[in-house]
Image 1 (tube, rainbow, N blue to C red):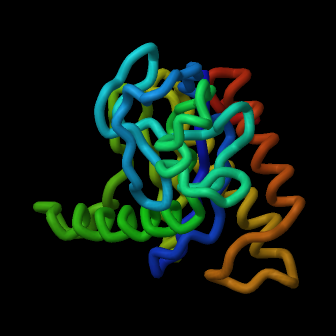
Image 2 (cartoon, rainbow, N blue to C red):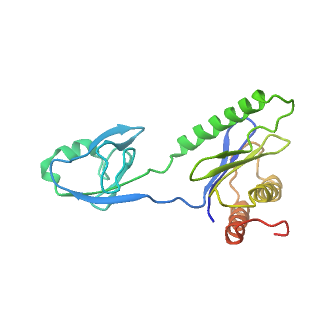
Length: 219
């Protein structure tokens, strides 16, 4: 079983902690001759495939590296615009690695804020007073689980749909937060969590949950 990532969101909707436990790498690398038979475009400071998927390369995949060297957003490692680089026949043959680009820090902040708003909407749409808000969202490849404390802090876990024991894991993460963040004299409420003991104990809890397939009450 796999736990993908953990998010902690404060009561104002700000992301105060995020940890990627496992990121699946759906990548494809291919050597191309001139002219490039894929259509690429700039999108959110990346260069992505907009048309012509083939050989494991899909629309929406981003250019990750050129000739084995990682790119820097929409530019090559030496600062050249990637689209301009591919227009020059002198740069061929060229090996390009494509894949899903990891979310940037700004994108993670934005998504945490969006979920906070969605959580509030879910509570307001409830036909009954006192709704707990969104506790789980399910897709075909992962489930999003959310636990909100009485003080409004949200703990969010993205996991394999088959992973069991997530409710217990969420409460264990809350316990780790209480013991190693709140009791840290240098930590300020609602601010980003930067505590080595919190990191270590969170990772330990995730390892136990993954190995067991669940997180038992006695863990």
